Image (cartoon, rainbow, N blue to C red; front, side, top):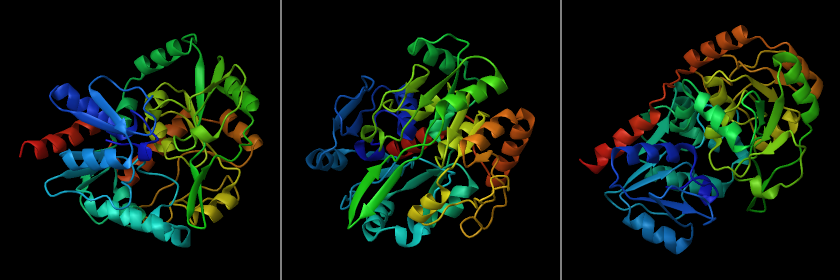
Length: 377
């Protein structure tokens, strides 16, 4: 197993698949590549360094590979091995792969193509993925329409996750929490890839005040930077802001949240599936669109115009983004104060039907079934 090229830890889709397989049999041996050997894993998972020689040994001797990203260029799969790629996002905002046009570098294409040719099953959760992924992930193989394993923790009653989080951070049970998770950004200049976090203009104090006015209660903000970016950003925050960037599993934390705010992170969809109110704050759409090459949605200069899906990329789908969009703090405040639960639930349900979503808390079990089918065939 590996997450985010070794930068991640015990999280995302691979975590929930491993947990399900371990429940079924204690005889399975799990090996996980990490860049930081200090990361915490359960005792039944063996963490190994994500180095060239370590990968050469463990990838050569493992029967199953499970990854949420890409294997390094040049990786070769032996005959008889089985590779399940879960990716780290399903329905999203950002264009990927060949959809990015000239913004998709030749090296990125070669890495993607090399990895995709080895994949036996790509885990997806919707019709959306079937339309986007052939060019987005440069993939022409077989899909496993199981749902997203990382979203199983978001399905149904989230009382336990909420209570556990508040106890972990010494918060009263009645405290309400909004997560702010700006998306991952990267640049490629002169053939060199780099990640950056940029700076945000979101007014934390104003955000919390708006939430307290609309929903009542005492609110805290959880700041969550992408695993690829977390090590590049540091700073001190007020006592009402909790830094969640170092935690390995995004969705376990998300399950404890009351509201989610982001710009272009696909985690917005995960939160929406759980009926957590989602607010989009996109103060740099022109710059981001220029850097990304394109987006999967038709964002407008007017925040009040309904955001429809990009038909070039998803021609078989007709839907409208259910999340309120703001380009500045004033618009975000207005969206929060005017938020209506019934309208949000109705729009989200229509969106899920349009994209053919699979979300029932059983994704991990379906992927585990496929793994065991291969192991015992």
